[in-house]
Image 1 (cartoon, helix red, strand yellow):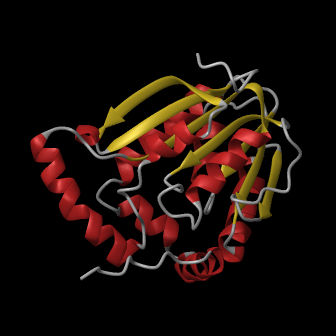
Image 2: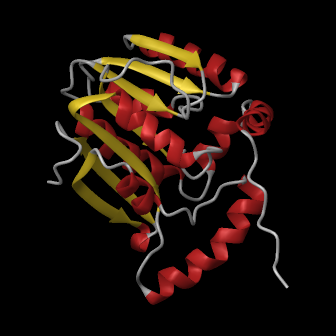
Length: 226
């Protein structure tokens, strides 16, 4: 007997859920068990784009926690933050305005970006690929919107290799789905590999391998594998 796969929520349903969470999202993220660590990981992401002077996309920005880290490193470029939740976007707009960053926060679906090809110098995506409705479409959109040589910097979950970490990870997979509606077991490395125009530049793991920082570069010629 075949067991039916768990239906994946639509972008609209995900946005509605985050609308409800928006009021306490920052507080929960700050006081949560990994709040301090997540800030350190986001700081690592900000350091990798601090000197870019063009447009950087914060994909699935939520309340734009990344804006705080970008402001701390004196980010030189312009920020385009996109999220599907209207209430998250409103909070992100206020935050970016208070921080004084140059840029825009807009409502949108990261799997259907209203951007021309090659217009971005960087794409930042922190803990969103495991939540969005169409993760592969989102990765393809990031690739399309990046200029040749532009960077995709992605911070998210990964299956660890260590025995103890794997034990904990397999316990967290159903818990994260039930409480957070997040699919931490998505094969992010596979999603990135499927985007043929992206070549890996850097990878670092944290928390026993359960969190990974990926940096990929848009190739000038997608047919050439670096």
